[in-house]
Length: 269
Length: 252
Image 1: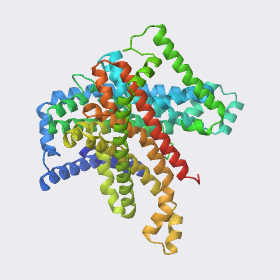
Image 2 (image 1 turned 180 degrees about the vertical axis):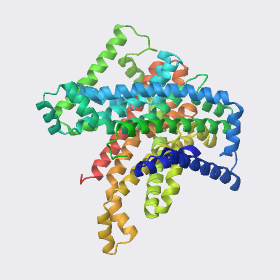
Image 3 (image 1 turned 180 degrees about the horizontal axis):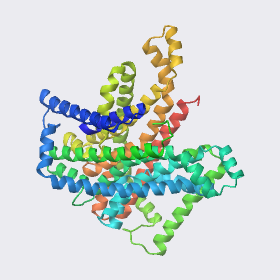
């Protein structure tokens, strides 16, 4: 439980102070991690928490170090599924947002179907996808895609609609084409909103990847979780959870960093 | 769904047209191309299957909705309670928020195996999972709502001798209500889905259980029927909270 708390705290603080000094950030992150680790270890010892509920952090880390291959392979496999699903879902979401923005009739016809599609329980959808595409990396990526595209579509649409009509009129009067309008004005205006959705999508695509692995696979963090559950090995469950937390927080941090780079003008955050 | 209610009838007509086209293409593809049921059963077959298995499906939907509602209620209470605690005692913020963020950094479904081990495969494990999934969203939206109160309004009330609790009750809670309710609306669909996902890993009943059993028996009409029922249940829950939201927020 250590890493995420520390990361997000550090991120929030530096974001508001806006003095990005990489070294100080790193030091603070490591300090936060160390404090969280000590609190975890201490709390388990102090309150004599049974390992069945919460094992000592050192026990979990030692178990992970004992079989590093399983965790590294699982991490990389789940990462690949997450990334592919996220990239596809993000691209499709932005594209559909633009299409819905441009063609009102299509939006009114298809958007309700998108909404309903999001009420389909992910495991039911997953069952079908695994059936159609087999137990492949692609199937998991499609499940991650399915969870990702909708928030991106919604926020792209919202962001595009906040564009000032006067600015559009101004660019038009200088003879801007539709494409120029989109690339120079509308997408940049929508970018902060789009990134809000992309940050959410980063977490959701990981959910998709993990749940997708439950339909039977041999590697992946979701597989590790299930195997540990069947053998009632709580230490291994926590190990997989730690790895998932590392993956989730790391990916989220990367998306947030890209956001700060690209949306440098935005005061929001 | 929401825009359709407020927008003019053309939007509704187009929405219906879209749904009809989808169903027609689906039915046409399934029948015309003679797709086997495991690829895509025809809509009419699914509806027939739904009707013939209605007793099982209604039972399962009731079971799942009960878990989702109980967990949803519990999650809302926890989220709102923690947010109010932070609003009253600001020192709590630096203790609660990092812990909540840390717990939430693992995708919530990741906890399913652990929660199933701790609480068994009965109803309680699903309620706990739904409560976990809901409470964090509610906590964040409630906190954002409580924080966006106008400083000057607080100062004004204090200058008239309002207590911290008075400011909370008369000013901050009403200000927070729109954000809280939209967080609650978003959480509805999530709560049903988390209940179903947890049921898949082990349960004594419910839609997730029905879906998983149907997958194992390769009964794909049944899978699709359960999907239809799950969607309908989620939409009904979503609609209910959306309706309550519009009722409560009469001033917006």
